[in-house]
Length: 238
Image (tube, rainbow, N blue to C red; front, side):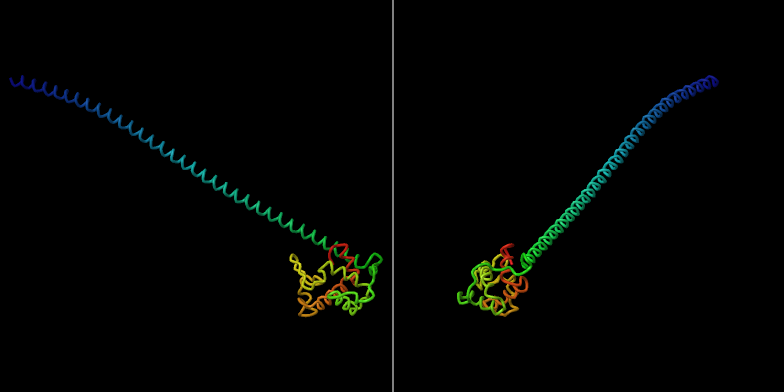
């Protein structure tokens, strides 16, 4: 009887172990499957993370490239602007030099022509071929004063017709005549008028002061009134 129960117990125990093994195998298989799925999910997540990191790196590289390009374009634009400004400055400098050169050439030509006109075609005084007044009594006002002062300055009466025409053209013998564009003033149209202060402080109102200064200017530059008048006819100024 005891042996029978012992056999039964052994069989029950064997069956229990078998069942437990089966159950354990089932759970073990399920656990391995879960672990495999978890591992697969982990790989997918890691792949997504790697891809995101790669995208971020590429985005950063593109942004850096765009920033560098904008910087390079800005530097190029600034350089181009500086070169254009420098070129414009050089052009203005060249233009100013050309203008100055032309002005100097024009002045030299005018001085040469004035010197030639002042000396006359034969190297002497330009003669006056018009009617010569007998005396200064033929004139009145500022013209009479001019005639008398001209004789006092050592010129002969035959020079007065030239002086008369010259200052008729310049001012009409008006001692208050003023050129609004140039500022020339008085009977001889001194430029500026203040030059005549060398003959007197009343140069603005005194015909005699203006005439004395004008005669001195003519003598120093043209020798005679007729030379000055000839130059004025040739150039438009004296």
